[in-house]
Length: 223
Ligand code: E4P
Image 1 (cartoon, rainbow, N blue to C red):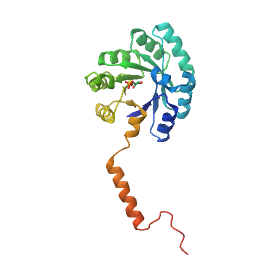
Image 2 (tube, rainbow, N blue to C red):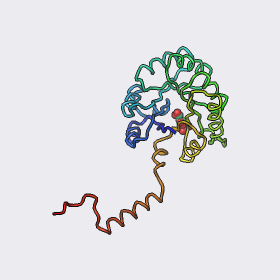
Image 3 (spheres, rainbow, N blue to C red):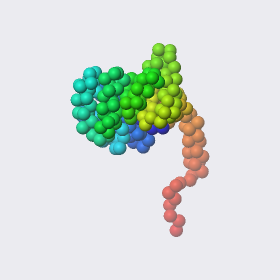
Image 4 (cartoon, rainbow, N blue to C red):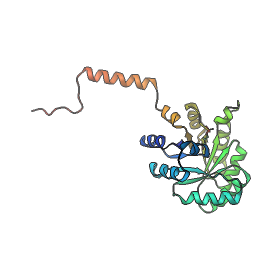
């Protein structure tokens, strides 16, 4: 499963990229607004920090013509940029236009398998299925993810199912169980994936035993 970090914070992208397991970055208008810097500047810096990664940047217009203008501007910024488009009628129409031109898209604000089907039929590269926002309303966000993975596989659509609105590590576990292609998550969730108390205690024990024995990796040359 590909791992994307969901942020507009350059330092978070830098740290996540250093781990060597980052496949891309998703942003949205809220995250870019929080970054405190300009849209283009932020997205281009992210592209530089994640060479070869898929970097999603979102349109903010809601009519087809305006979204198309924004999409072409966003796409022209860097070949790593994936144009993020909301799942509205004009948005699906735009995704079809962009996919016919070979431009990669990420369809966002998808909550149901029927919405996901529309995105897949239009040729979306990624279908962003939001889970946390559904859980917040006492729903089962992961249910639509599982249905969407099955739909994409059964009908042979090229789209990748991207689990978005991830709030905690269990959402990542459930994404793996559902066979999702990608999960995007806040930096703090990605950071927490490293943690296990047995790793900490196990490492401490290895180091204590090693030091007690006075061993060294780089032994002084024997004469
Ligand atoms: C996905 O691309 C979105 O940017 C993001 O996952 C939304 O998450 P939220 O529901 O925590 O805002």
